[in-house]
Amino acid sequence: MSYKILKPAGDLGQPIMIMTEATLIGLIQRTILPDATKLDEFNVADFYSQRRNLYGEIKCLRKHHSTILLEKAKYDELLPLPNARYIVSTPNGVWSWRVRDLRNIVWQELYLSNISTYYHRETEGGYKTVTFIPIASAMCISNLIGWEQGM
Image 1 (cartoon, rainbow, N blue to C red):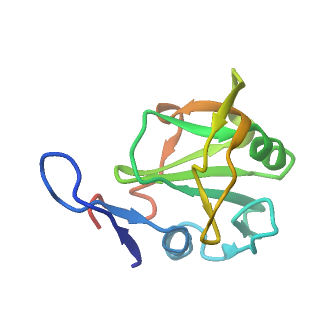
Image 2: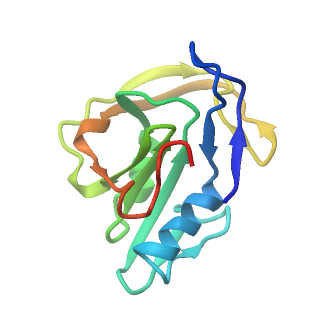
């Protein structure tokens, strides 16, 4: 398994293990979608399962949050795809949303400053249309893919 190890967090002083996209796709392939194929960076989604006709977009977060940011541009790209899933890992587990099932979306304009790294280059900040989806509305797939806290 491949993880990024971050500085100690909180009062415990224990390192936090952060799952990488490649590791998460590997877990998905070994457990629930053996035919999942990683797509290149020019595709809308990160992987595709032909057997289930399912596309998956993956985000690996360094911190756990009760709501997860979803950009409208990404939502609009995923929505037309059959069985598109938005899959997010945090230090507390892995969650999955079926994009077409997202309801009552409230979009807002936020300034996001260099919050992500794309191929080892920071992205330029700017205003983006986003929503925050509650993690409680997702399906927890941690047990399905064999993820354990502190792996």
